[in-house]
Length: 208
Image 1 (tube, rainbow, N blue to C red):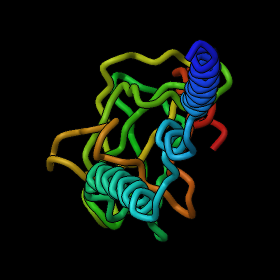
Image 2 (cartoon, rainbow, N blue to C red):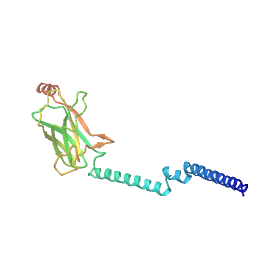
Image 3 (tube, rainbow, N blue to C red):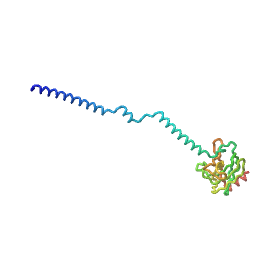
């Protein structure tokens, strides 16, 4: 009996040692497994790729926005612009003296409209939209249209006469606005002239 006790103790020790190794291996495997992120988890954390449905929704949203902008543009262009481009339009004005009025010699237009008088910039180009007088004209041919001025021009000053349609409220001058300038071949119909002094006019009359 004295010789059996050491054998039992040795066997027990071996069993305990084997069990300890198994537990250690299990813990090591568990640690390695917890340190790795499964591929499925990576896919969930990364941004999801666009599907055909999401791309289609994006395209639909963009199309809707473009349609809205187009409808707004069409609404802005809803003003009556018939007669802006005319083929047989005519506008004639001559150099003249003034006593608070300008005489536009001839106007031919296919639509009721306006003639407006404008000053010049330093480079001689027309000042718009500001004007110093307006007068309404009827469709067809008109002569000697009188335009009252509310600002007296200087002698030798270069002025302009500009032809418009009456595109807004009838009889109300609306420029800038719906009373757009008439065009011929894409060019605005405007004519320049010079304010003369009394002496210049007398000299011209004597020359004739």
